[in-house]
Length: 424
Image 1 (cartoon, rainbow, N blue to C red):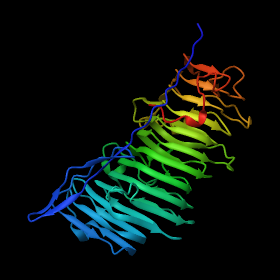
Image 2: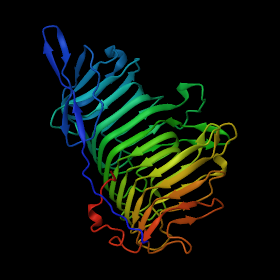
Image 3: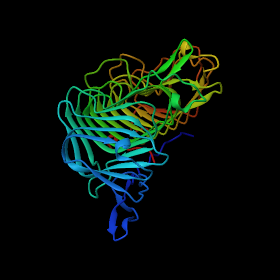
Image 4: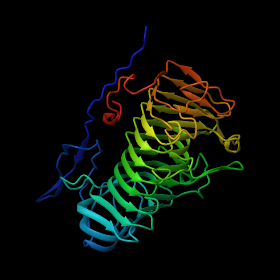
């Protein structure tokens, strides 16, 4: 019996939650959040009794938790306007502090930036004003970075931001000198989230250095989440590079129209460690959607899961890559990871035909397995001579099950590739 594939394109419903406050004779009370269609679900801040209104609408703004005497559940509202810089530091109370926009807050100019130093338990949200989905905007900075994070960070969320015309990294976290010690929470970053963010004509979105060298582990980020990023119109090469991640969760991101003139052999998401890359849409691009450079932190092997992604119309290379490196296998510190690549839709790959273009390039995993199953591919003009699904590049032999390949999108049941969306 001939196998057929029926694809369902379902609308994606996005939900954003705003929290407003009203004044009573007894102080500030919290109004229940009101759902608003048109964006993703965000967690509303828990607002205590204090609302701190800061900013004049221009110039350089400093938000210093020590000076302000910040307390758990405080809400800091930044007045609308166009600022040269916003510098946020010394916020480390036991519960969440929230910084929100009060109207549209822009950081603009040739040296505009936001710095975050010595902060934890902090949510910075551009969802503070009803009707403005991206209340923080960083734009027109041709030479410098937009957000610079320094120091040990735990439980930091940055959401509902927009970046446009940024010439250097959008977000740079300088954590590469932190030497990891599993029993010391000051030696790694934990729970860093980037949600509901737009980037148009920018350099790479996120750069986090770190790695494993001579048995020393540095720059560890645990539980990194990047979700609902809309990244477009860039020649950036990598969209993100993370050198040392444990349990990353990269999902529901859209990347389109990038690397038109870039010919480096790069990934779009390049990340070392273990975690999940799922429900992403990557179109009209150059580079592997993810270079999963797999290894596990600690002595127990963990998984790298690549699933339910849609990758279509690449000028160069396969949809995904799995690879590990011998010099990053440090006894007692790191070990191998197992990779699973499944339920992905991949088509029109490596149209330049200057490399193999299939679902996944599989390199040496130094003991890890690579399982490839339930993927659908179409129109690979330069496949591996022995497989339309995998490109085995080293000693790790991928395990293939129930993958389908079609000569054209129409044969795969896709009538219009331009209508492909994030998989439901």
